[in-house]
Image 1 (cartoon, rainbow over the protein chains, first blue to last red):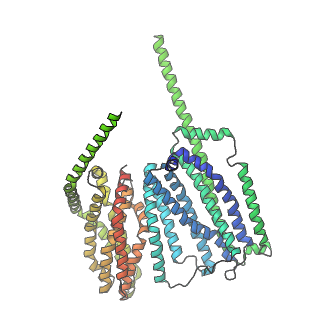
Image 2 (image 1 turned 90 degrees about the vertical axis):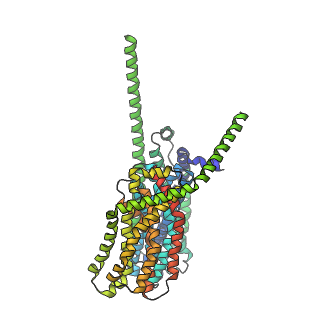
Image 3 (image 1 turned 120 degrees about the vertical axis):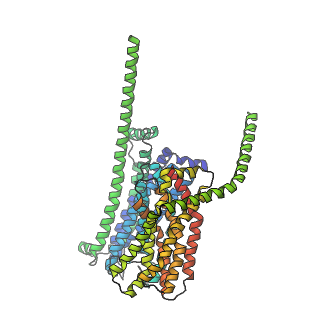
Length: 352
Length: 251
């Protein structure tokens, strides 16, 4: 068992594992994120207190809770990397850091945009907002530390230590900030009041949360694969794997998975439509009870940020692959030139 | 084959006993080595006393800026005094932290310390303690002046001293992790601050709250207790992390 798990410390095995898990996350992403968002925006009932502006919850809560989860995952990967010297674990950690930072930023941004219509201010030194801001700082610290190293292996180790120090501090920071908050501002606001949401509001929230997890998983795998290829560019397995992928001609995600995604989405959509549209007209939908600006701003910015990260990760893969190939042709050219030179020398020696 | 392995195990056993013996013999020399490290650090600090003064001057100047920026109203100053002193202390200590390993890294003595049989985490602990003594004693000596500047009451001042005594070792220990991680980098000054400032937030909260409580004549034992607990936890764990970070930096 341990031996089997430990075999994933090898980059090529880890790469294969990435490919194996990719379809699951892609399906979850494709099914749940659109479904949860549309359900939340159109089919979830209107809140009796906050009316339609509460729909920001369907992007805010998934990103908030998963930004912390992503940090825990990152620190776990860092721990595995440092303790068992798994090089592939470092790539997981490095893949997660920017994603966690983006998700954390989304949580802060949507929180601020939601705060304006409900609390009357964009920013308030609320305990959760403050600890979320500190979490963003911790993410940025890990990234900044890695970026400033020239030797990437060393940088990965250093930022792994930083991630682990951060995870020990997160609970301390959280409780200290909560305590500080009660000291300085007697509870004037209770976010959402949390009187246990009704099921027809909570179900789309759970779906959106799973969808966000699918997004994080998908992009983590993409970035992790990039990182694995980039680090091992000079090793033979990289080109073997890339050539095999190209030669097989199979689509990256098999049609079966698309079908699974379509079926699941249809089932979800069926239940969603049964809830009934909660708006009279398109104009009412866009207006969101007069708070359209805030709702649409938070959703558009969040999805643009998520999309940009995804596109950058995919483009990164293209550049890395083309660079690896270039490197290979260059090495081959050098080898050929050397061989030709040697042959020439030999010919000269023979003739003389 | 059998002969081979038996002779091998015999050999390893021999090496093991020799190792153990040497370790037992090395015990007094560990203390001697640690003493030498401390002595050397004190001597270096004494010779670089001009450089040592810089964070202290920075500390005083930052605190001078606040009355200038906020107006000299004694009540306001008293209200914010704890916060101002603590923020200034964290910033100035961060500036001074750089000295902890930089020179040793540059001249190669850090490598010798890593290679030496003396446990690295002990060496590191001694270095951090000497660094703390050298940096914090001037700060504590200067603090009556700050109490005057910021119109602190006596209880507030006493609490400030207590929080500084308990809290600044945490800054040195946690800060040493950041310095150890970045010691190999060319320009690490701002980066260290970026890495470390989020980690000092709990300390800042508890320390300033203790001073605030003291200004209202509320009991502060619990707050000092929390800071003390944080100090003990850091004292137990940080040296090992610093030692590992140094090994990573030294590669």
